[in-house]
Length: 92
Image (tube, rainbow, N blue to C red; front, side):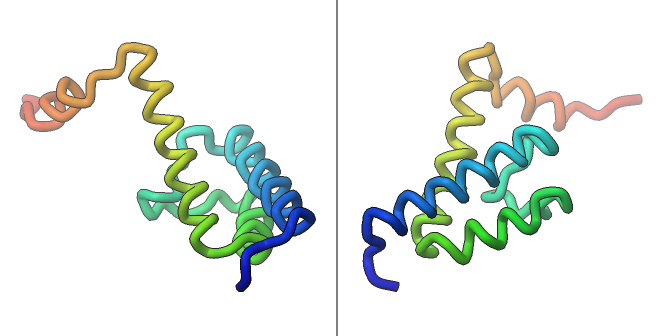
C-alpha cells in the first residue's frame, strides 16, 4: 500500500477512533499488543480498521493505545514492581 492521501488518512483515523470507542465501552482494559482476543462486539470494527489502514499504522496505533493505558495506570499510582512481587508470593 502506498502512503495514504488525506482522504485515506482521515478514513483510517475515523476507523481507529470507532474501534477504540468500542473497546472503551466493551473491554476498557483490552490490549491488542498482548495477543488478547478482540471482544466479539468489536471484531467487525477491528477488521475494518485493519483493512482501512496500512499495517504499520495498525501496529503503531495498537502500541499507542497500550502505552496510553500504561500512562494512565502510572498516573493513578500504579507500581508494576509491587504487582509483580504480589504474583510471586505464594498464598496459603
